[in-house]
Amino acid sequence: MKHKAAWSAAGIIALAALGWGIWSVYGKPEDPMQVSVVVVKPTALQEVVHTSGTVKPEKTQEIRTLSPARVVKVAVKTGDSVQAGAAVIELDPALVNAQINQAQAALDAAKANRDLAQANLDAAKSNPIQSVMSVPDTQTASVNQPNPAAIRQAEMALNQAEAAVKQAQAGVNAAQAQRAQLTLKSSLSGTVLEVNAQEGNLASVQAPLAVIGDLSKLNIDLSLNEVDAARVQPGQKAEIRGRLIKESFLPGTVADVALQAQIAPGLQTNPAPAVKVKVVLEQASSELKPGFSVDVDILVAAKANVLAIPQEALFQEQNKNFVYRLEGGKVRKTEVNLGIAGDNNQEVVSGLKEGDQVVLNPTDQFYEGMPARVKRDFTLRGFQPPQNVSRVNTGLNRPLAPAAYSGGGLRAGWFSAKSGSEGG
Image (cartoon, rainbow, N blue to C red; front, side, top):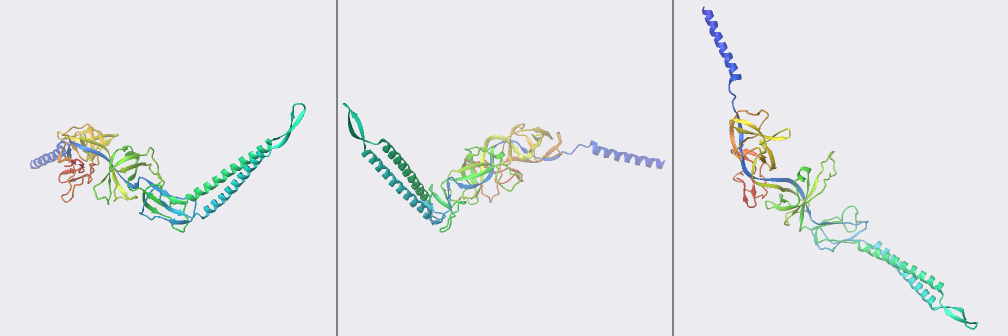
């Protein structure tokens, strides 16, 4: 009996343990997953294209020669200011002067031949020949008449002589024009940016002998990919930044967007096409020089009082955008339609409402109706810089730092506007 009782007690304990194991696996309620959320609120949002470009003068002139000649004078040096029409480089005129002398001699000979032809024509007209003509009563008389054949011949000779004079004069003019081209002049008022010619050396026909630029108006040349170029239009505002710019930025305006993309020659196997864009600085700056590389931010869209969420809350399925809302202790998969995109936040056109709690950084383990509870509640707001960092008025709502978590708040980028701060 004692053995039976012991075995009965052991059986009861085993059954209880088995039941507990089954309940813990299949019957125990699932622990809610701890998630971080952000509360959807209206905010201001700006979409900006970030790129870099090269500073170029609005107007430049490359002084070149079409034929090699010895440089006899370089009248400028790099950094000099020149006026339009000023002589910059003079080439050796010795050969051209010889050609002018030869052409002038041909012209003098042609003029002499013309004068002789004119004299012959005058003589033909003033030296008539005698002819006999009939008069009444069967009488004859001798009269003097011009010789038509001689006059025609003299006129033809004069015409040929005059044509020869015109041809010789054209030769002189061409030689003189060629000599004038040996004095290379500036076609614009500006600054000498480059001098490659050296006195006594032959002028190169491959490279410019000098480069003149108007530094009173500067442009920024950009090359944008197809996606960014599709959002950029003439008239949009831009901000130019650089290490040597003392102000926070220099204002600019998009002046031109190329009508076609081009593939730059290079060593890449499959280079991507790029669209040329020109940004004009609204004010001259002595801090920028041609050839400098600068950062450019172009404001392509701006909206106020729109619903936005951090981009890390979004995920895609079958080319559709979704988020997980936290509602009633469970996550709800929700499709959203998007608008403009900031650096860190994305406008939500439909699918969410103000006050919704949206889960951040969802993973593949999430599913519709999954129990969840708030681990940390983030508020969509601007980035708060450290106390020892000054806030810079960017005017384009450009973030000063990438999205990160710090101090219990989402650092989604601190923004400011020319009219005042919008960051928080």
